[in-house]
Image 1 (cartoon, rainbow, N blue to C red):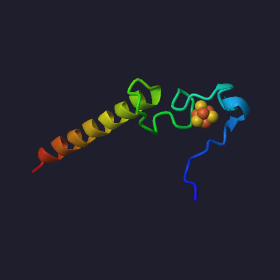
Image 2 (image 1 turned 135 degrees about the horizontal axis):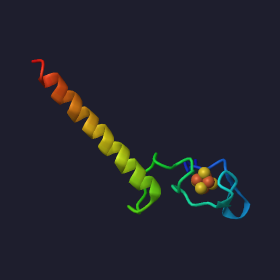
Image 3 (image 1 turned 180 degrees about the vertical axis):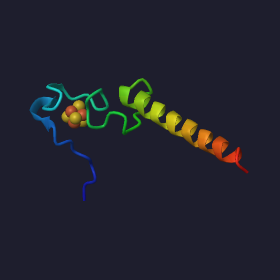
Length: 71
Ligand code: SF4
């Protein structure tokens, strides 16, 4: 049984039919952009992913601070 993920936009010769260029997983416009953390921390997807996580952390902290004001 294979569990490898296959992108539906990947066509012949490692070409991305969505971005109209060679497949570069995690690049801006890729379906994985911002949704996956890559081993390369400089990957656009990894940077976006970390920014989203930091934004979510800040939101939780702010909500906790707001709730603490009323108790
Ligand atoms: S760049 Fe992203 S969207 Fe395009 S083929 Fe590769 S994995 Fe799929």
